[in-house]
Image (cartoon, rainbow, N blue to C red; front, side, top):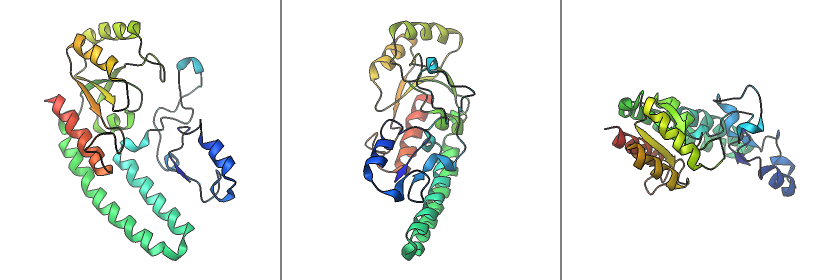
Length: 226
């Protein structure tokens, strides 16, 4: 059982694990792999207050949007698969090394390509872009959601529009699965572009694998940064 962890699947995974009846994949067993436990998580709250919205007690779970995290998770997953299936350990290590080599070549290319994005201010829909923005050196100056997990309201968007006059943003960024209307509303009134990022593999036509995910995300951001 492979999951992101950090409470991302808290609403359904515990039930699935219980109903599986499989002791080998329960939390704490070698057959349970929690990807986020192998990286440093951002936005770990000092205190938990449900009035703050959908806050993750273990920190921001969207760790996959920093490619350096992907490298760490891939290394840990390679080791775990080799541990669980010793007869094929050589194959896992070989495939893992090949991925790390290709991935290690892609990261500096992406970082060089993304240099113009450093310092760029954006409004995001939800707190799901934190790792991407931190990696690229961008700045979040507002969110379309009034609180994490709560749908945008007209009142909040109007207030955000006013705040952008003093703290301007270069673009509005949302994930492919977000409702487009709040971003379009703010884009029209603030006269700044709205950009849709795939967020995950399959989010856009070009994001067919992890490499395409970052290629497409950077190209879309650089297009509005010009």
